[in-house]
Length: 183
Image (cartoon, rainbow, N blue to C red; front, side, top):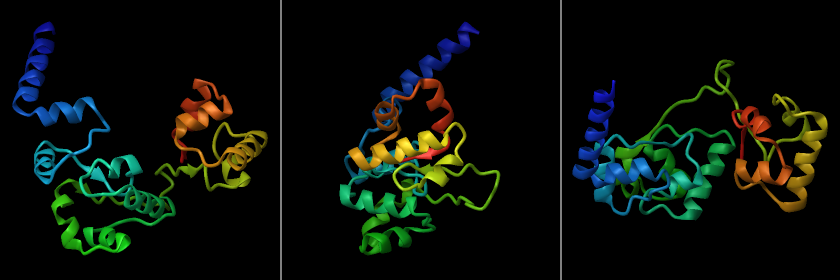
């Protein structure tokens, strides 16, 4: 068993030496690709961005995507829109598809059936009303009202860590909630 572990470590070291980008992508989940050449290398290494699950930070990993564009794409996705092709993203951003074509190698257009009862549906903390929040396991009517009050008082939640901190929720509660919520 120890031999297998050493072999795996050796392989990872060799891969990092041969492909420094592979090491950066593996070690830093927020690493931003710096050029279209890096996009090509990342694609060859298996890097993919699921456009129908991507966050603002995910979009910003791609060269040429501005923060405003990332916000637009994320807001559209959170509103229920799904992207099926590169042309959909281009239309949402108001740019020609040819401008985004160099990124196509790393974009994955996965389909999520929102009506499928087996697929977990996440509730948006910044948009949900009290009734929608109460449908989430571990959210009582009192907690739902607290979420809405906090949102109105201090503004939208930036991420789930911000939500946990602002409402002073335990790790155990967050372990349950994080699979049902998004910001």
